[in-house]
Length: 442
Image (cartoon, rainbow, N blue to C red; front, side, top):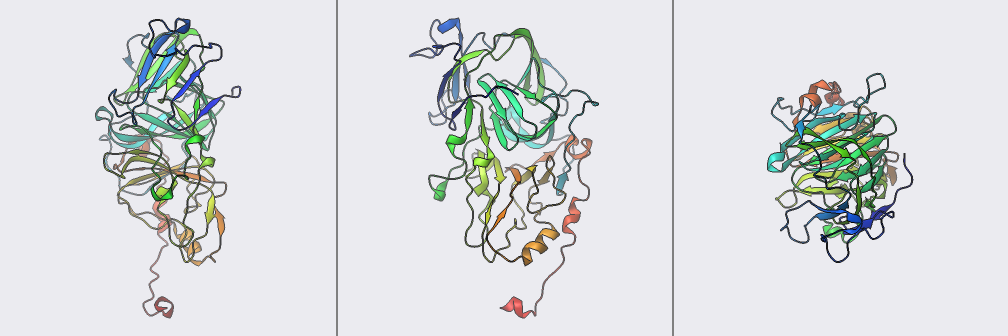
């Protein structure tokens, strides 16, 4: 889709970069000189309050051909299937599973990333900056002369089918399935595709994604900061009719301008988009008996004000060795005070090898019981335990939240992908109790 792109390595690092076509574009010694090199405009993008503690302060300075303010007034446009209104559809506490979401075809017409966004569930309110939304995207067309930015929060993109070339004000990112990309609040971007594409989007209103603390794990493990990649400066000087789409308080608005927004010749700061290859995750696991909690698979987290409790965690279940002794190794039966939305990028998920398919999803809401299906339980209960590889060729993930998710009408009805027979996978589970068994008393 593009020439080989250059990246900068590190999570949340302070970077300084300029397009090679404009050497010296970064001002020396100050952020906002009276006249910038090349007669560029200086513009700051703030991701936190000015007075946030230095360790949490997020901001970048952009040096651009025109300031981003040069557009016509925003006007409301159709929201499509995007919503942050959680009161328009009745609650549903059942275990839910979705078959793979439909991707537009040539016969159904051209659909770009923004047009193909559909909200499945969520909670909270972007106006009060508290909450989360889960969307899927299905598209078959690039965003030509159109960009999008989210005033409400950060977007974590999980491609499942089709690579994405993402133009941002900071440069370009090529994101393939089994990679993720985070576009932080307020950053303008366009998604270019080379064919039918599908994936998942986690939106958080509260703050920004961070790496989880490692605690007793120590200094190394899970997602390593150096494996996160951010774009280098790249600009285009293009005059054209351009549409800027803004998501503001859960609604979409459009403004027009006569040039590309990707006219940043240089930038420096610690507030920028980034991507990460899930194959680089360093897995931690139990090596004696029982399970370590699934939190050991957390890639990124957005924490709430309650210590140790997340607005949203992004968790993956990658290929790994399973070696526990005297242990039922698949995920145990469980009821949770968190909401668990799962997706599948590729392969077969170990606890439900039938029915849960790539491009589909499941939702186990707060305190709704869930766990391995009957087939998985029978197989794992009687397996001869030995060290073995599991999940090879597979990548399942979970968006987990402390908030109670509300379904949208699209997610529960309109998409027509809810599997009505999902509950049946547990029905063959029968009572196995043997009170007089010598085996039980051993």
